Amino acid sequence: MKRNRKIAITGGIGSGKSALCDILRGMGCAVFSCDEISHRLWENGEYRRGLAELFPSCAKAGDVDKKALTNLVFSDPISRKLLESYAHPRIMRQLYSEMERCPLAFAEVPLLYEGGYENDFDGVVVVERKENARVRAVALRDGAEEEEVRARIGAQAAVREGGRAVLSVRNDGDLSALRKEAEKVLLFAEKV
Image (cartoon, rainbow, N blue to C red; front, side, top):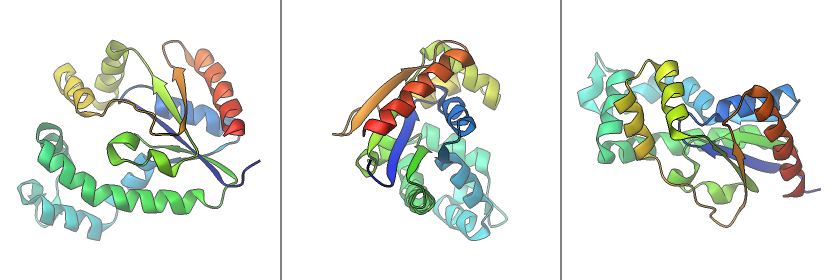
C-alpha cells in the first residue's frame, strides 16, 4: 500500500461534497477541506487586507466586504481569476501541509480542475447530482436566488480526468444511499 495517499473530492456547487466528507469523517477517515482552510484564512487580518488592496471597490475601512467580493467575482471573470491567484496558492499550501501527516487523506477541493490541482492527488472522487437539486440545495444553504446559483454553476469548469484515477459517485438519493457511495470511495482509495 502506498504511503501518504491523497484523494481529492470535488464536484459542482451543491453536489454534496461536504455531505460525503462528513460521512467519511464518521467512518474514521482523515478529511480536510479547502473551504475550512479558506474560512480560517478570513480570520487573518493580513489576508483580508491583501484582498482589500486587490479589490478596493469591495473594501470598507481597510477591510474587505466578503459579500461584495463574492458578488464581484461571480459576475466578473477577471476578478474571479485575480481572487483565485491570491487565495488558491495559500489554501493549497496549507492543505498539503495538513494532509502530509496522514497515510490516507481525503480533501474536499471544490475548484480542483479550475486550479489545475488534479495531478497533485493520487485519485479524484467526483460527486455528481442533478442540477435542479444542486440549485435548491445551494439556494437553501446560502439564502441565494436561483439565478445567482445558476450563475455560480455556470462559472465552474467541467470535470475532466487529468490523467488521474477518477471515481464518480452519485448523490441523487438520501443519506443512506450516499453512505453506500462512501463505501465505494474507500475501496477506490485502497486501489490508487
